[in-house]
Length: 325
Image (cartoon, rainbow, N blue to C red; front, top):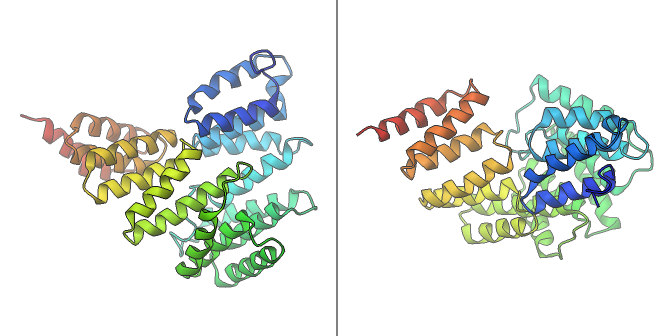
């Protein structure tokens, strides 16, 4: 269908999501180019910008994703979808757990929150549950007790209307983690893990599996964590977080070769754009005595992140020493 009608952006956007889930996102640029060349007006169409934004977001090219979504955000057909992606990125640009850096309130984060809230005001006034959940994430990103409590109250209200709403349950688990109530968070996530998978909300299910797996890893329940990671990968082979957690489990069990293989997948899924993942991959190559690969990955990280010198000292120099006779 895309070969004969490459500018069918509804199909193209779904296809990009499917390629990601199948672990074949590297095939997407060909179809984006086909669409680009299909007519003089297509290059400036909101649908194409949205599809490019989607691809860049999946590739961890956050700056390019924001730029592409921004071109689409005023469009009648694509605007609301583009806005949701932009808001999600501004709330959590690094796709990390909101509670990992509870005291992080730097200028960049404050500016991101300001932009996220301004974009929320542009969304349709007919607020769906998804939009209200998004507003709760924006409130929680302030990481202050009153805002977390406000978000928690809203989410509990939403769950009174629909007790099995997965996006609301996941957001509530996040609120409980921010409030340092891990057992309550775990209970919400366990509820989701027992539900039948719904392909209409794949990201929410995946994130729920990963968050619960993360909690299990911290409690040294590696078998349960692995099971959840494999469940996430069953539905999305490009789940970098699932591969990263599997790598961490292997590393903790001192299976450095297996850990390196998992971190390699995580590194690929993130478009080789994460210095911490690159470091973990290079470290496990070093421990597995795969010195050439350790040096290669270290160099790639340093090329992209010259202000990340610890990989030079802790990995590259040791790997170079390991190669000497």
